[in-house]
Image (cartoon, rainbow, N blue to C red):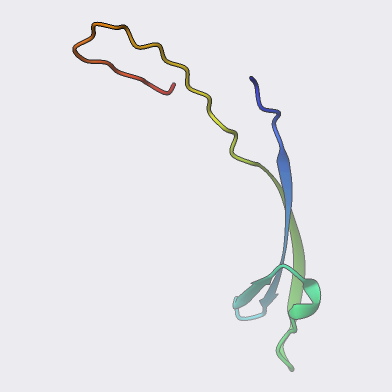
Length: 72
């Protein structure tokens, strides 16, 4: 069973002032520049694949002393 590749679009907003200080938020309206200082706002969008499930199948023999199951 192959799991479909699912990507999540992650958006964050960053505001950077003239001194190099910055803040990050999920919402642009939560960021406000400091009065009297120049600032720049940037939106960053990244597509991130979600983890996919791993399916393991093993058959254990009736007479076995030791066994091993590996995930590749």
